[in-house]
Amino acid sequence: MKTTIFGATGNVGSRIVKEALMRGHKVTAVARDEKKFSTLPQGAVGRTGDVSNPEDIVLLSKGQDVVISAIRPRPGNENQLVETTRSILAGLANTNVRLIISGGAGSLIVPGTENRLVVNDPEFVYPSFRDIALACVEQYQLCEAKENVDWVYLCPPAVLKPGKRTGTYRTGKDHLLLNTDGKSVISMEDLAVALMDEVEQPTHNRERFTVAY
Ligand SMILES: NC(=O)c1ccc[n+]([C@@H]2O[C@H](COP(=O)([O-])OP(=O)(O)OC[C@H]3O[C@@H](n4cnc5c(N)ncnc54)[C@H](OP(=O)(O)O)[C@@H]3O)[C@@H](O)[C@H]2O)c1
Image 1: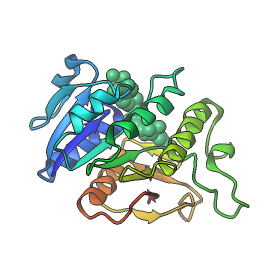
Image 2 (image 1 turned 45 degrees about the horizontal axis):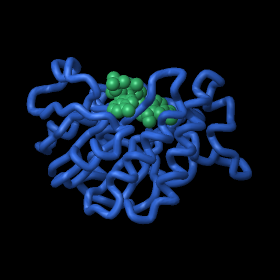
Image 3 (image 1 turned 60 degrees about the vertical axis):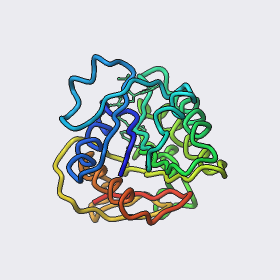
């Protein structure tokens, strides 16, 4: 499939690029600065673009099957995630291009609570991550309200870190997934596996889902 990946040189995005290439997809990898193309794996086609510009979204998604967003603003600019998500949704409105957002865990519900959101639970979101978690909640709400985009929002578990590709994970929908130790975790490599599984076998439409071990 023809796939454009925004945030392709980031922690999560670079793993999605690798997973997509391994599966034989044609990958357009977008970065703001072409100097970063040298970090892309062989096979990825580097293009420059800024997600805050809807015209870049239109240009870089034209003729593609899927657009994947793994965007994260630099620290201190967390609220830019809202602006960039608006731009992505505007650029893909009324097209046949599917959008899969690799987002945050903040909007999920903590199991066993009266609908407490993860963003409001300091056990899962430390104060230093609260701004990006709040921005991710708003990001998800923007998707929910958008009727003319074919979107899916992938919520990671509370802990998303570099690790191994095991190829295994559990899926959930609205609640944070916890393991038997009460931990909520997956590697970025396996998040990429889950995201590309959704690309290849769509099982969600205009809704979120979550994955964890
Ligand atoms: N547990 C959790 O909920 C959790 C944990 C970690 C990450 N996440 C989420 O996962 C996603 C990816 O995070 P990450 O750790 O991979 O972030 P990252 O390593 O900081 O990478 C973010 C990427 O986004 C790009 N970017 C930012 N603004 C852009 C713009 N306007 N136009 C084009 N590209 C832009 C950056 O490019 P530049 O190099 O040009 O800045 C960078 O490549 C985010 O949604 C983040 O919130 C969630």
